[in-house]
Length: 205
Image (spheres, rainbow, N blue to C red):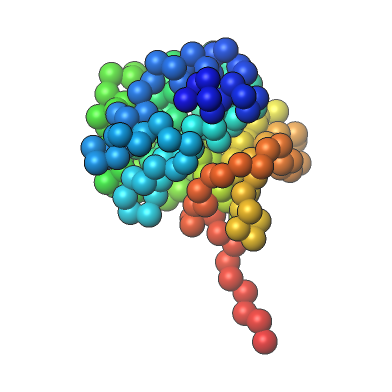
């Protein structure tokens, strides 16, 4: 995975590479899918959710410029793979997931990681009780980022996510500066859409 998927595609941060080298993806997928845990595509988790390709995860974490002082809000944490990667790098991770079955699966993979707090909550709400965060990662593609989540960023804090634009996904990053925030795409890659962040459908006549 590292030599064939990550290094050739600009996942170059040695800290990220090291974390992905020692964190077993197979521990975060259903037993029936362990044999395909390292393929270069999304792995189904059940309930319509997936473990995103390792490349999209590696690119997001590399662009995040992770620090040992970071307090991270991870939204759409699924079975906990990205939370486990972050746990060995940053100070604290608040992992938000709304699917109870996925939260229960995450409890196994994240057992013993004292700096990860798992929260069962609606993805679109984030976790305001733990704000402010220096970094927010939405582990999926969104059509919009709710203002309520941007408000949970500290001034100068970073937000990384995927953007879903008419079915085409790109990775994007932004930084909150005072009251201003905007996302700038930085890589075209596959990342699964999160329905919780779809724009409300408007009526057309």
